[in-house]
Amino acid sequence: MADDDLMLAFAVKPLGVRGRLVRLGAVVDDILHRHDYPPPVSALLAEAVALTAMLGASLKFAGKFILQTKTDGPVDMLVADFAGPGGVRGYARFDRARLNALGPAPRQADLLGKGYLAMTVDQGPDMERYQGIVPLDGSDLAAAAHAYFAQSEQIPTRLRLAAGPLITRGSAAESWRVGAIMVQHLPREGGSSPLPLTPGNAPPGAVEQPAEHDDWVRARLLLDTVEVHEMLDPTVSPEQLLYRLYHEDGVTVYPATPLARHCTCSTATIDAMLRRFPAEDRADMVTDGTITVTCEFCSTVYRFDPAGFDAA
Ligand SMILES: [Zn+2]
Image (cartoon, rainbow, N blue to C red):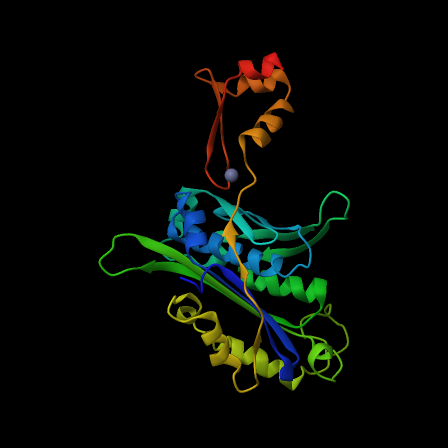
């Protein structure tokens, strides 16, 4: 499917809006099938991976973007990262008993519980790491991302996330898909009006915010009309979706960035990691004469002979 596994940047210049769209098919299906997650956890992680790709793929450097949640809900940790130019991966940690207690269709906010969402930009060893943290306080990932943009970038931002399994008729296998789309109002890039402040940005008791710009209200209301099936349906191309939304205003679509599953694990990196442990800690890791390490991201299993470390 040529329209899958990509990030598209776009602009609606007459509205002073720029945006990004992410579509993941085989890539997110591969990430999820490396684990045995119940469907609500798969959906949550898929959205986290798409959000990470959408934010990471827009960075103008070959760095790393890491999204991590730490919360008290049944899914107490999500980690997704993006490595330039187009690598994504992710994993979730969850408690099956607590998850089952939520019933068959839990709300994302109930899966997560309370805690925080951290987003880290890592541009390599010589550059400063930037981290933004927002509370996850009975909110879903999209709401936390909105809070992040209001707090960190102060650019009016609206985004949508949707994930789900695609069941092909006549086939028992389901394949997961996820879509993400965001718009931001940057009128100085495309128009002449000053940058308006977004409501909800100010601390309680602050002076009243100026009204939202009409162009921005139009752009975000149009985004709100996007239906979940449009974000996931492989027969609706990203360009068709953007045209459906913004053809009256004129939408410019830039060349796509292809996305692929990546992982940084290897025999060499895990060997080096094990060598950093004191010998007695390494001895505790031996089971049946072997040290076995499973990569949390891709579930690849690595086996080491403990004698190999003593010889070094
Ligand atoms: Zn791995």
